Length: 159
Image (cartoon, rainbow, N blue to C red; front, side, top):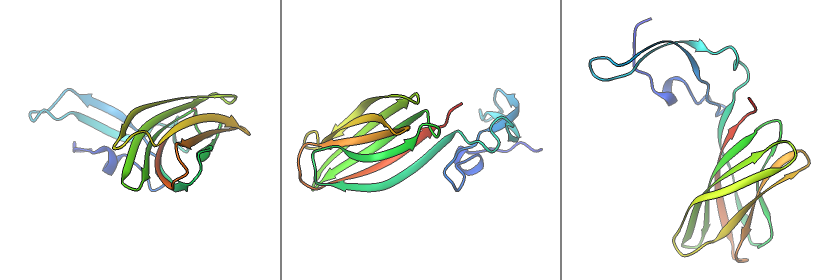
């Protein structure tokens, strides 16, 4: 097999379903004359064939006019051990972006919110719960004005 440059998104993922598959690396050399890393790809690691373990998905947008909990995402405990979310909340010209990590163990969830940026103040906060064998991400708005949430989920299936 001739050496060639690869890029993560064009050559090893994501697939049309959104899953990213990691290939088996047969050979790795430090660098060529142009300082490019050299690898030889032989195919998918058999441990992960048919069982993808990373998923990136844009979730359907959610618009709410309530300050009580509104579900942004629900996933079965068997589907993901953890999920990382990029969330944009928008109300008129006000915008807030946050990243949220949610980890669940089949009985409970723990979340942390970080990288919070906003134009005019905090628009919402987030909570993780475990309901009916599923991890749940909810948002709590600070007003009843219409707020639209755009969410991208990066999920990690059980190892």
